[in-house]
Image (cartoon, rainbow, N blue to C red):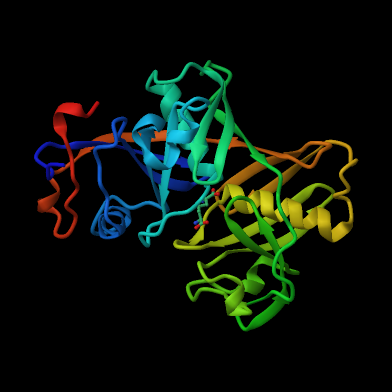
Length: 306
Ligand SMILES: N[C@@H](CCC[C@H](N)C(=O)O)C(=O)O
């Protein structure tokens, strides 16, 4: 490992305004400390993002080597507080968009590796009519989990449902999205022992048949303008809430409105979910040699970067 002597390429993208800093690292040369991630995701000290996606070939990522036969690339997802997470529904769609745009993957269906396992994405080629939605198979939500969960925010408290989408969620149904307050203070989730590694919280209003409105306070981030796993967790909780989630249920599309836009969640008859929505790359640049930003020092081998 060498310390930064040449600029590292970065891209900035978003999915429904859930924004990400994407660092292409095909050969696994970037060694990011939690402090590097905090600085780069800081909206004043760094570039700013709701999360960092390191795009590394599976063969060069020890965590993903076992999936190298089925997927070419691994999403090393980091929260802006420096922690990592198992899965990110918007991040993986942005990563897929990048891989197709950069010519690393042909458009169509392909698999990506995550800490939650393999996920299959579908990226259509761009055309005049098609601006760039990306879909991802999110798998089966897992609901049995800690009982008696309560969420408190904005001076109020609600019972919540645990949903595991690869990463953990606690979903509360509220009368009005404003009931959760400004969410600058993180919601409290009890019992605290239920989530030793933290949990994302969804506040959900049922707008109509197969139509939800959701705010999300993400673990390791704060309130974001959209969350893909959170949208799926909200749909899974709504299905459980109304009893409509029987395994033999007919396939259905749910519209989930978030502050950053709409995400569609298709529920198949076996209960598996597909998440679809916008995914865009908006900028590309180079990081200055990192000692110029006080703090981050990233191990970087320029000769192997692409
Ligand atoms: N924004 C993501 C979720 C990212 C991970 C989350 N902060 C966690 O810690 O689990 C999404 O779109 O799913």
